[in-house]
Length: 373
Image (cartoon, rainbow, N blue to C red; front, side):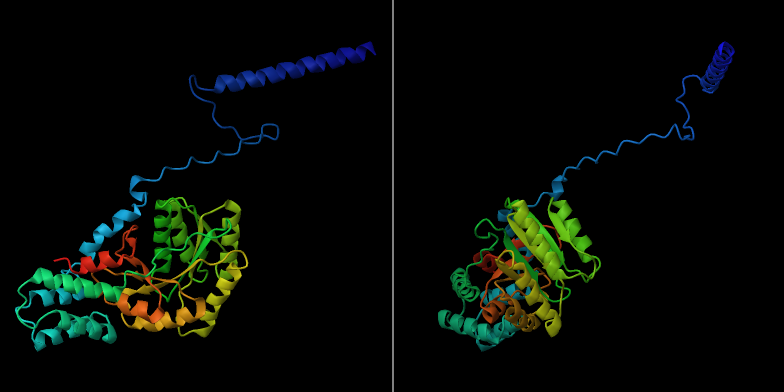
């Protein structure tokens, strides 16, 4: 037994000496002043790496801070000035005429119809102006301008309630559904609307319910990220009503102020797609009432936009109109007939391609911009 313990002690000593030699050899092999080279791990060397920390949130660049709503219409005068807008040019030609004879009135009438004011409103405006203004030479252009402004305001109707209904009842978020035909820029408009709401201090959730266009959800995600707005999205080709429902559910849970739902563009002549819009609205209202249905119309489409508007209004009960591209490329007169056609007001207008080129429509500011020299 004593012999066994002697042998065991000798073996332990040999192992300790060998281990020391290996460690000393590794240390000696390291160049002086250098960090140890990364060694291939052996089973005993492997340890769990700490989870990477989440990257710090980058501050929103100053040019991404949404422009205050009150200052957006300052640009309206330039966008709708007579130098860029045929509707405005036609109106101001009346004031610059030496004599308002039959030819001058005919020219004005043709210009207004061409500017998408529509036959009915054009007849009303020209008849009213002919009553108010003498066919004698216009000796006082400022007085004529006042008459023209008053008659235009009657057509545009400043008494309409253009308030965006973005507040829900009983603690529920407001729900805004944005609809329209293909190619009118709904996703971009939803992103711009989010910026308006954020600038007003609202907490917003966006629903990417355009599940049929591959880039739509990514595009909306980009808009939302720029102002810190959450975007709820589903699988490509999934049920848009389910995405909208989930977004409203999350909005309620998070105590959000408003949920804005982007929908896929659809031709107003396609009954199946139009029925789907009705389904989206019905599914949303299982959770919360839809407080606003905004129909987006490209102002450059003119009278064709009226045919689209009729069908959408029948399906989803439109409560407000957004006119996009109402800048130098549009004629401006479409504001009047589209309001009359639907019996609902224009609430928002798109003034250009910039992120803050969406503004609340103001009848007086619109008319004043048209009459700006």
